[in-house]
Length: 204
Image (cartoon, rainbow, N blue to C red; front, side, top):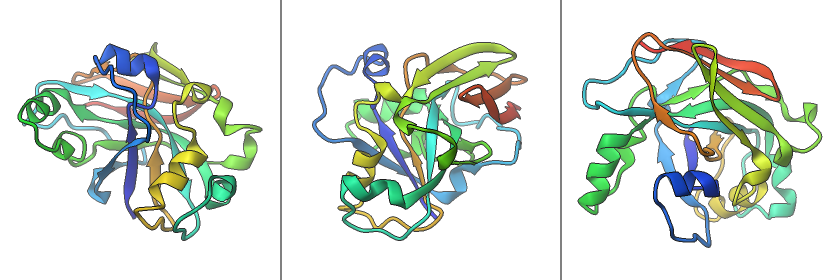
């Protein structure tokens, strides 16, 4: 399986990071399968970064093999949703960008893709109108709504599938809203989708 992720998919988040350009297509990056963190296992802050940020996102699970998928058929290619965190080594990301090089290592390191429990997509009337949030030690630190996405889930799938064949079990991280921030040892992170706690783990 592979992890496909979308960057800069919420306007207010782009503003908080100082991104002013308007993208005509989704910004896509990949994470390896070794980035997966699941089943409530703790996240261990890596030694190579002093600034790990959380980025809370809706995660979509692919359930069919697909290539060159049309947007109008894209909803046939996923069956479940959850809340995930795209952990980012922000200090490394800045360094790599300043050097003009790729920044995958700041996003794709081990355990950098935390995922919660999946729920059937059929539970929700409209996946483009879902609220999700993150609390740290019981305090809400980030909240978003999929209605605010610059590129909708089905359009992202159509775009990506032009270049990469989607396979059963692939995960799509759909972008983070405004409110990202740093984590520290000992914190308790909980992710919610429409008020349901799907993600729950500690930082070590």
